[in-house]
Structures are given as C-alpha cells and as structure tokens.
Amino acid sequence: MRAKPSHPGVPIEGILSGAHAIGGVATSIAENARMPQSIAPEEAAERRKLFQSYLTLSPATAGEIIVRGIEHRKPRVLVGSDAKRIALIERLIPVSYWSLLGAALKK
Image (cartoon, rainbow, N blue to C red; front, top):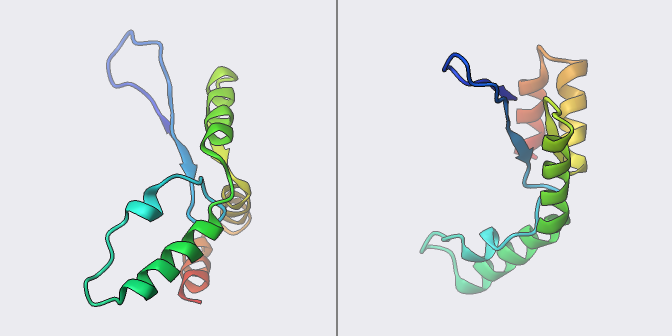
C-alpha cells in the first residue's frame, strides 16, 4: 500500500509493509499477549508455543527486507513468504480474495 503526502511540495512517498501472523516475524508479541482469564495457564502456554512456531522470520531479516524496499523505492514491500502468497492470490482473484481468505482463516 502506498501513502502519499497530502501537503503540496513534499517530495516523499511512504511505504507501508506488511507482515502476517503465519510465517511472521519472530517478535515477543505472542509472549506478551494477554490471554482470557477463562483459559487455564497450561493451555495459554500451549497456545503461545504454537503461535511462536509460526513466527519463522527474524526481526533483523524483516528489517533488512523493509529497508531494502525503501532504498529501492518499492511501491510495496512484502515481508515473509506468506505475504508473497497472499499478494499473489489477491492479484489472481481480486474479487473473491476476501471470501477465500475468510474461509482459510476459519479452518
């Protein structure tokens, strides 16, 4: 997604990057996430462990990808293989993309 400044005379374009949960960036978000109080501590730990297993990209690598995209003035920076797959699906079937994505997330 590209963001352009609304002020005349500002020669800067912003680049927004996306990283998705599956195959995402291995940060401490999952460890620090609050769980519902109704979940047993053992189940909460199991869920955190499962979520962490999906985080395969190091923050340093993700940062390098984003910086490289900015340096090359890319209009779109995709971080992670899942972001590339989702972008491809979005371009192949733009009309039914959201319904397909919703069905995949329900599984």
